[in-house]
Amino acid sequence: MDAHDATNPVCRRLRTKMYYVAGRDHVNLRVSSPTAQYWCSYTTTVIGRDETPCSPETCRSHRSCYESE
Image (cartoon, rainbow, N blue to C red; front, side, top):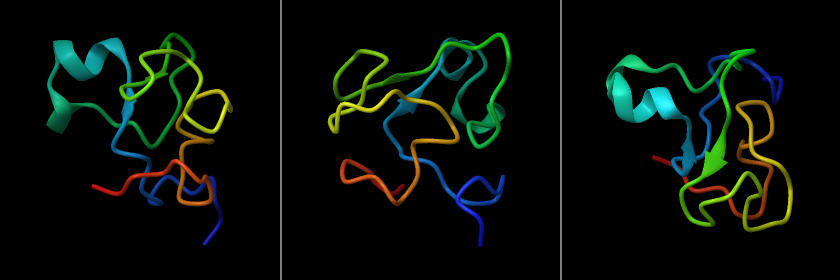
């Protein structure tokens, strides 16, 4: 499976504003939105614990800081 496949799970720490507005069950964090800003709920910044930017494409199981659901 490709690391950028929309069915591949993302880190449970990935957040965007719509996560809190619409609710977790109504936000697809597996596909990037051109208008969304993403951050890590662990670091509370746009950079994850491994010092790499956060996004649906990058916050996948290959990262050392990845946390599954």
